[in-house]
Length: 424
Length: 165
Image (tube, rainbow over all chains, first blue to last red; front, side, top):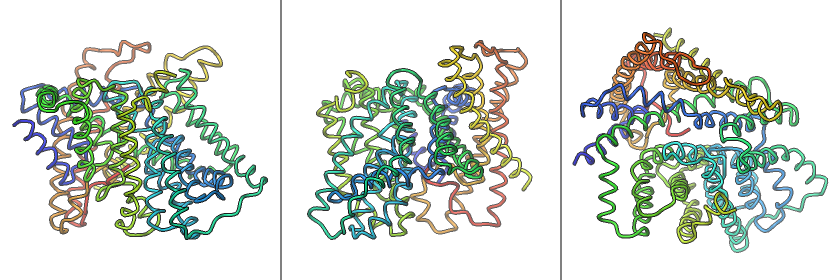
């Protein structure tokens, strides 16, 4: 009964438009006071959240990708990839997916990925006669790679809430990320083969390829440096983010010479706004999490799940359905923050690896990013391409199906995620 | 009224600089550890302090920019008058929450200040340096929310924030 009442209050606050951070924090604080617990716990929870060393990676990864973005790295990456694969069947589509995957490796956000690559790739593909729905769907879905391929802000947040290793999560995202890239590429080539209608791009000259690659190379090197540094244990995710930030400055100032002072200041401002917005939600969720733990709600839900749900498959199907439903109204981080403390204990009770569960959550949240009515990537592509939301949404279905296939494969073969961090 | 918005803005931009400064400190830390084999005792701790102050100082500014993450799926469908009611109620929730957080945050700060409590880490800084950010940040947020609430009488506001970051 209490559980239902609390959930109703939370949804009411969120749906009337109280910012997520203060809806969670406010309800948590109210529950503390109502339940006779010390309200001092609320400011303490906020302080202890923001004091987390791992969360420092959030502003730094944002600074890194914002600076690279202002330096025009998105366009450089797309041009370089296109020079190599543009003449393949469906070459521009393939180049788009690969650029999304590469950009994902230097950015932790799927919205940034969709917007950056979309701005360059959409006009190019539409001019070459690719079907519009296919193009919009491709970009909205390609953007979601941003949070699956490390670095990834949602994974940092999941790791923080679940108290699991962010490095392991980052490494576990690589396998499913590459798998998804492969599925998208195969689909794009088949689509081009059977739907046709586009004008192929002539193969680029070697000189063109080399000069395009030369511009994209430092960003690729940076992506490799981050993953290698994390894998070898040379630095923590936070330090990787700091090094990435410094390297992004060096690349855009000295190599590409594209970063102006005003663009730098803009990147600092944007990163600060996003960081404050994200970390305050994490802090609000911490207050809420404390309160529901004192009311023993996660235990109650775990017990309910253990008593009523038979077997891990049913559990995963049910959780997937709940997450897809929530995704109709909620955005990625709020879903992860609200559902992780509630679901993780039950998932671990059923024998799921917490890192595996994190990757599963991230992919499901990605699905939420491209399902209407609230799908951030849909909004982004709608804004970039200046078309209706419906048109973007109709193009997304095949890609959504491929993502659900990935979840299925991940369930049957957990090593798709767990091999790189634990067995390699 | 505008003076509070100006203070929020200055606080927010200062917070943004603090967050960027963490990048410099932690890069220096990595260089010092690998190239000079001489890790610092201050980089991690000071950068955490910068993050706490940076985030809490930026809260009010982010509110005035309408950039806090908000679920707009339902309010988008409402007529303007109902939207205004929703925004007003949301602002009241923000004011009450931040007011209470500021008061209790002040208690925590004052207690540490009186007793001279320290962090017990390598630098052993006084605990109140970090703790003061809570009352300061939330008081500013409450004040900014009051400004926004009063501003509602003159200007229609469909929602308090954007649905993504």
